[in-house]
Every structure is written in C-alpha cells, then in structure tokens.
Length: 165
Image 1 (cartoon, helix red, strand yellow):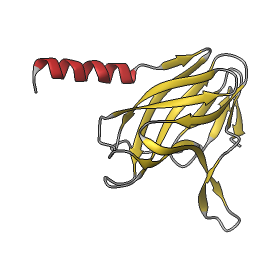
Image 2: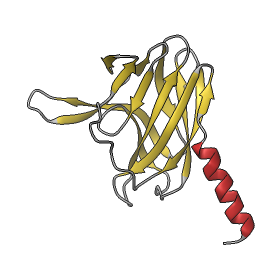
Image 3: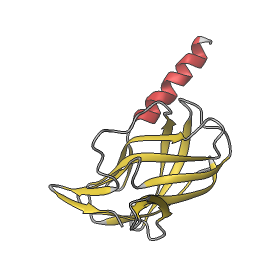
Image 4: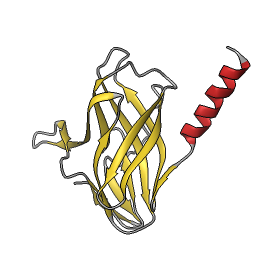
C-alpha cells in the first residue's frame, strides 16, 4: 500500500471516529455490522446524545441498503424476542441519550448494496422530527462484541430510565 493511500485511509478512519453533530444532537460510537459475510442485511448501532429540547428520531436512509428502517426487539408473551419496525421512531428526550445497541433499538439495513467489510465506512442519514437530517459516517466493525449487561433499547435520561417505544 502506498504512503498516499495509507494516509488517505488513516484520515478517513479518523474522520469516521469523530462524533457527528446536528443542532444540539450528537452521535457517538457509531458502528455497523452484518450477521454473516454474505448476508443481505445489516444493522447500525450508536449513541445519540441530545443537548437540547426533546426530539424524535423518525427515520434513516443510506445508499448502503435498498431499505433502511428503525427497528427494535420486543418480547412476545411466550418469552421469544422478535425484531419489529418502529414506524413512529424513537423518543429523544431533552438532555438525554438514545442508546441504539444490539438486542434493542437499531438502524436496520435491508438489501445491502455491497458486502459490509471490516473497516468500511458507510453514510447513514438520520432524520429527526425537529432537528432535521444529519448524516453520520458509520464504520463497519464485524469484530465488536455486545457490551455485557446491556439494557436493551433503553433511553437514558439522567438517573431515570425510560423504555423505548
């Protein structure tokens, strides 16, 4: 690999690691993954921090997939977890955080336009009810393990926890 190509790759990785901002909303620790190398679906996870008034994440889009939706997991009466599309989106409380993580709220990528490879960077545009659109550069991390003790899909507002819609 040439020095110029390595420099360009290092710059892209640094840019992808930088938090994204829109109005009073900031996105940190964004990553994407697919279940298997040949999978046509993937998901993106991130921390969405709101330093302003209450808002709502109402949609997402990406050229990396034919269909992008907001999803979460819900437990049915028999204890089985099912993934569901959350059409109304997710509440983003004032001065709160929406944790989008494995097993909970996430951005679902269906009909991937290319295989998600370790280290790739894909753009995802998040749409907020009040703050508008925000494009986040999301790094593919196929090696990351879920955090132990995850609180699936919860919205954290200070010391108070509120279950996502």
